[in-house]
Image 1 (spheres, rainbow, N blue to C red):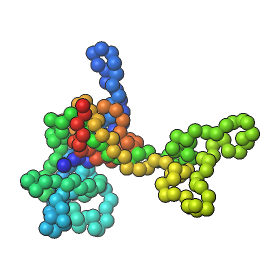
Image 2: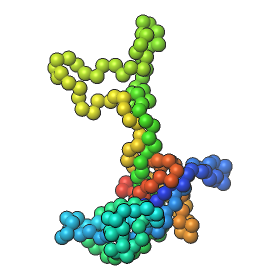
Image 3: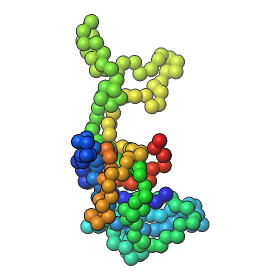
Image 4: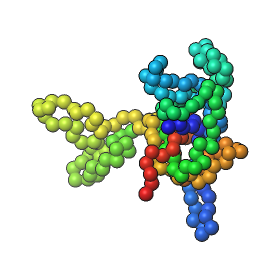
Length: 209
């Protein structure tokens, strides 16, 4: 499944004829270029590596990877697995035209980092009593285990820690509009991350009923 690399511009809204407003996210999708083609013989799987945009500062290894194939360094590199039947060449351009016939998309991005957070904010725990003898444990998580058996805290226990800054995928986002000339994609609803965040756009793997 081939996807695209885009940049989140921000959110806005549009109005229908009946007066209802629809929240939308605007995504800038510059033309993507194929930087590497992987196959089962050499890499163990079939995939393409793509990039987009222009990178001002880059190291020698990045420069060699791009210039070896005659491509200008981009802002990032991502891989998409493909079928054997698809015939693609290096430096081929991929743009928003691949989504013209699509209705829904899956979008992946890094969520906003919120820093260290307690269990109430991070996991939506209920707070404890404000009165009735409770003086120090209003926002405490409570018990985190049993006793001598098992004598440990189970892995994955919901506790305080770093909130956000994780890869998140939102599925079945409806396409509102595609502007090929301005390289803009408009989708219904919100997507992960802040403004100017790099995101990955793929066609939806689930059919909305």
